[in-house]
Length: 568
Ligand code: TEU
Ligand code: CA
Image (tube, rainbow, N blue to C red; front, side, top):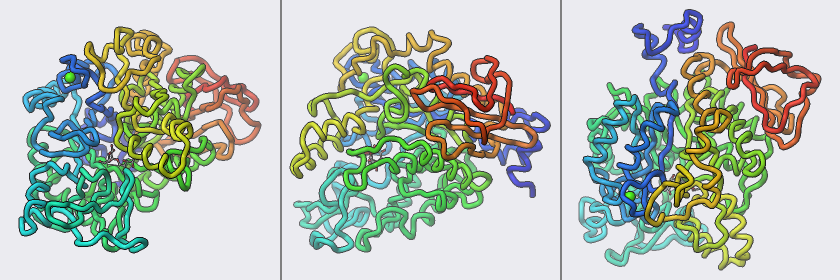
């Protein structure tokens, strides 16, 4: 049988587009999600239709034309299910109901249909590592030790002794074991105490999850983003949290029970994934998930002790090496997801670019790097106009459970308020959760009520209306990148070679497919930077993004955050 790479090379040579081909091998080898772009919506902060200050599903429907204009293929919708909202919906109390603050099930059905009419799929957030403590399963479990639901969760009669394997810390601070006063035992939760972990060792629980997934797939959703999916194989008593021994068995079983015969996309969130174990998730023959979100490029710049609260500055040679390792590890073996940001991470332009003088050019440069690698690129809402970190200056402005918990914990440990706030300003999850800036109208056109979290003060000069009207703006650049990927098998499937690996600020790589070659040249610096005498081919031609003639050669000067893509 022909390998995927061979099939694609032949297609490229014959300029067959996957959509227009009917040959079995082509449709099988080029899944729709390998040429589509994902766009993440954080519903509470996207668009508010009824002026209660909270974004909602009708608000999203009202913006579908905007998303279609951008050219996206699917929306990853952060949770809209029934939830007490301790963790903004990542604590679900009913997987088959919509939280009334976001709308109704009829709104949801309309969103699926209206999106489909624009060739956009809806990818649901599948949060099944844990439920809310208000979920009927947990209510039943805690009310009666003999309930069949008791074993849907993880219990022990004593808190673990310090230093024993089960003595695990929760992601939002404190012990992962909390006492349930009702039943007198301790239950396990890797996140907030209101997010009890499900016991995946229980086959009845797994069957319930599969049934729920099928219910959504039958409704017409395009797939799932799987929240912290690398944690479901945990064995807390043995101290095993991520990447447990049963993980891949559960994923294959889930695929078999829900995805077989369907053309859905699945993307697993896997903080523990490495270039070595990532093919286990996404190798097509293993039938697990389409791809994973991995975080190597994120966590490598966290502090050993204080983690995200003390981020290190970006070291481009290290970051380039990480990207190259991932590109190589999955080429022809699995599939990469590509992202700079999401609802848990700081804004891309603030973290990796320049949110000041070079905001627009650096946002475009970052987009060029990401969108011209192999994989499925994801855009986090607002990234397409270069939105920046929140800029909050006091703890009262924050809403996120993680930030608020760590504020309390770290201050109790002697961290100074100002130091904590500096860390939060750089890395709190709320940086990415301020409302979408649509226009210069009050509250950035997000709501006519009082927004649940403050709008970034820069909305008067940074909003969709202004940016979209500018041909040199961020939005139009994303549009062009998306179109370019659609038109070029080389961008979707070419191999990747990093040049000038050690250069401190030039990001230069080549993509090749058959006889085709693309050279990407980016200067991630505030300084004008000359191309060194060795290591970069001399190439002249038209920049595929601006149409301008450029000449890449030794000594050529690149302006701050200049970014080009040309055929070589
Ligand atoms: O995030 C997983 C997760 O580990 C993060 O909480 C991470 O520790 C933190 O953001 C680092 O900054 C997923 C969801 O994306 C997140 O929003 C949820 O809070 C979490 O799972 C629990 O469901
Ligand atoms: Ca609303």
